[in-house]
Amino acid sequence: RKTLVIDQTRHKNRIKGFLGRNGIEIAREYTSQHWSMPFIQWIKDLTFNDEPAAQVRDTLITTLLNTRKAQLINIRQLRAHCRGEHIDPTFKLLLSVPGIGFKAAVTLYCEIIDIHRFSRDDKLYAYFGLAPRLTSSDETQKNHGISNRRNPFLRHIIIECAWIAVRNDPALTLAFDKLTLRMSKQQAIIRMARKLVSRIRAVWKTKTPYAMGMIQ
Image 1 (cartoon, one colour):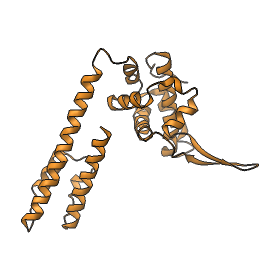
Image 2 (image 1 turned 90 degrees about the vertical axis):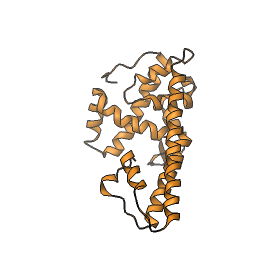
Image 3 (image 1 turned 45 degrees about the vertical axis):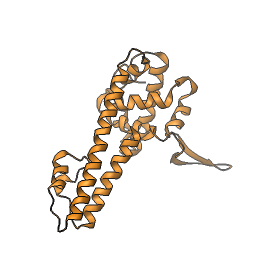
């Protein structure tokens, strides 16, 4: 699924580059990152001075649509698989955590596999790429922000989930609002992502559904 997402982004960038080389500016109503079908139809309806350019446009659009179709089939297959009786109950427990949707739950489950291999929260933070990168001398220690050493799939996903969670869980909303009084929202959401990781670990280890609004 991740490969298909990367492919789709590349196809979009190729189309935007093609339009730019042909002096075509994207209409203002279509500048959103989401490529709607009306936007794609707008590209299909563009006229060019030469036939080869139109053929290239058609090929690029066809490739993009085929990738989208492959993504849709992939998600349907994943959903069908996760409805099977063989699926670990942990998967459903992950879905009880605020901000964790189907795609995020699949990724978390497949990348972590066994939560017991992380004996402490900070080890799981490091695996997600949420641990601070520290350097120290004889008397001082400096924080350089979050480390780049991580699982390549998880940090982006958990931060996206954290943005959703702080809007849906009262306890997380309260904690986020307090943090934003003394730091930027971007810094605060990293801390909320860590809180969310701790909650995921607790749900997974105790085999207990998430309790909404619990202040930890």
